Length: 211
Ligand code: SF4
Image (cartoon, rainbow, N blue to C red; front, side):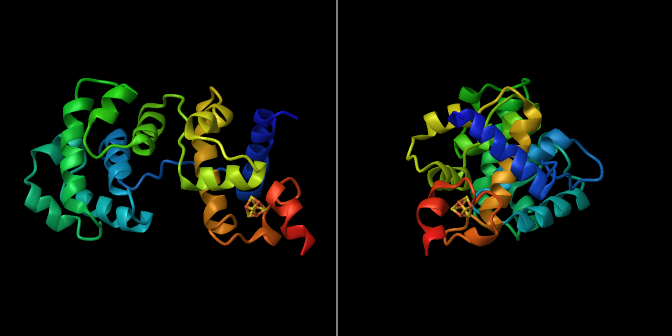
């Protein structure tokens, strides 16, 4: 089996184990779901999702349910609503700058990366979940799993090519499933004994299974 085939079989195994994750989570009962994803993608940088959930609910309570409204609202006012979010001032400015890019329609990856405060992971989350554009999201969980599972230390570009398939269901689920794996089993200190991937994982087979 080559690496891409193995990646796909990992995807199927994780999907069976955890079930579909159905990202991106919808918090707002009404409002623009695409804008909710874009705002959430920035707010979730370097913080826990539950903080973002609280922040999104607060925005909805105060009628800020689109990026246009977010843009038009006073920065200090929003800052007071987003108390649960670390680095909120910087993130509020990033979201306001993003509006200048997304108001013209579907943004390119290059255009998103030009926005101060938007890195590759956030740009790819926006493209995939907000615009349904086939893009693989690479984060720390994906890097750590790949290194341990395949025993290969590759750069992000190579990792992207191994993990990418032109299927948005796969791409959306794979990012979510690898995050779930990273949170539950493939932690900094891995909990391999209960991991659904252990029988094929190079690190487990070579090291941990022999203890
Ligand atoms: S077996 Fe261990 S190292 Fe391998 S993917 Fe699972 S948790 Fe990570």
